[in-house]
Image (tube, rainbow, N blue to C red; front, side, top):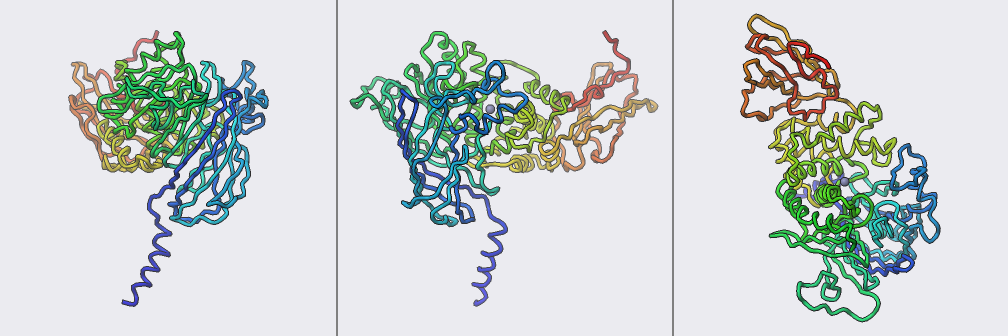
Length: 619
Ligand SMILES: [Zn+2]
C-alpha cells in the first residue's frame, strides 16, 4: 500500500508532462466603449478574465493592437512598400502606399492607458501592433486572473478591412478594433504582428456596451440585449421603443463562445431582417442608396439558402443570428457576421456573401490558425462555397472547382509556389499566397474526394466539424478524420500536398497489342503519389474503368462510377516509376484511354493522360 503515493507522484511528474491532452485558453471580455463620431476617436475599459487551461505557468501575455498597423512606417506599411504585387486596395494609382500618406488625424491607433492584473499595475510595452505584458504575478496552470485595461483608439481612414468612411460611404467598419489577447496553445504564443493577415484568437464570451450617436445603426457580432431601448429595427415587430433621453444610445451586446468581436455603424443603414424557419435570424444592414437596393434585396433569400446548404453539408450553425453588413473592402468574415463591399452588381455580392458565410464554419467555429494554416481557412471555405454556389445559384458545373485547378496549375508553372506550411505573411508576394491558400487549399478537399471517394469526403467534413467545433484544429486533425472515415492511411497526402511543392504527374506511357489482349503501361513522373483511375472507352461505345490503388494508402475507395464495370488492380508501390496492366480486349477495340476522367486529381501535365489509337488532326 505504501508504494501507491510514489506511483501517483511518478505518474504526475512523467506521464502528464509528456502527454498533455488537448486544452485551450479561455477569455471573458467585458468592454464599455464610447465612440465619438465627430473625430472618430474612442475610449474604453476592458475587464478580461483569463483562464489558463494550459499545463504551463505564464509570466507574460500579449495583446494585439491592430489599429497601430495603419500608421506610416508600420510593418504593414513597409511590407506594402516592398512587396512585388501590393494589394490594389491599399495603394494609390502609382502603386505607392496609402498608409504612408495618412496624417495624424487619419491614422489608426490603439493604446492602453492603464493596465492592472488583479488590481496591481503591470509593466507593458507596445511593439507596433503587439502589446507585451509582463505579469505582476505568474499565472499558474489552471488558474484565472483578471486584467483591467483602459484604452484609447482612433479609427483610421479605411485602408484595409476596418476603418472609417470607406468608398461605399459607410461611417464605421470596426473589425480588429479592441485590445485582443493573443492565443497561447500547444505551439506556444501566437503574437503575430499585423502585417496582412490576422485570425487566431482565444475562445470566450464577450459583453460589449457601446455608446454612440443615437442616429447610428449598429450591426455585428453578438445579440443585442436592449432592443426595446434601441429600436432601429431590432425591436419586436410592432412594439413600442422607449429610447432614453440624450444624444447617444448605449448598445449592449453579448456574444457567447466566439473568438472575435466586430461591429459596424452608419446613420444611413437600412436594416432588414429575415427569420429562418427553425434557424437563425438573418440581419442585413446596407446604405440607404438606390444604387445598392437591388443587390441587398437579392442577397437576402440566397443567404437563407446558403445557410441551409452549409447546415446540411457541414453541420448546424450554432448561433441564433447572422448579419450581412455593408462595409469594409471586398469581403471579410467575422464571428456571427460579415462585412461586404456594397456593389451595384448583385452577382459579386452574392458570391462574396456565400464565401464569407462559409467562413462561419471554417474559421469562426473551426478556428484554425489562419496565419499558419491559411489553406484550411480559405481553402476549405473556397471548396464548400463552390459546391454551394453550384447548387443554390444553379450553376450546374461538372467541376465546380475548375477555376481553383487552373489557378493552381498557373502557380506551379510560374515557378513561384511555396509550400502551404509557409506563414501567411511570409510568401514572396500576394499572388502565391492567394493561390496557395484559396485554390490549392480548395484542392486539398476536392482531390481528397478523388482519393477516398465523394461520400467519404462529405462524411469527413461533417465529422471534422462535429469533432473540432469551438476548437483550434490543425492539419493533422483533418487528415486523421479522413483516415477514420475512409479506413485509409493518408499521411502521404497531407505531407506531400501541404508541406512540399511536389507535383502530381502520371501518364500513359505505352499501349501495346498482346495477341487478342492489350497491355497498358502507366508511368509516374511527378514525385507526389496518387491512386490512379483509368477509363477505357471502346469503339462499340462501351466503357470500363481500372483502379490502381496506391500501396501506401492501404485501402480502396468505393467505385466512383457505379454504372461502369470497375476492375481493382494490384496496388501501385509509389517507388515504381512504371506500372503495367492488361485489358482482355484487342487494341483495335479501343477508342481511347484516359487517366482520371473526373479531373479531380491535380495532374500538372495532362497531355500524357489520354491515349488514342490515331493521331487526332491538329488545327
Ligand atoms: Zn475567405
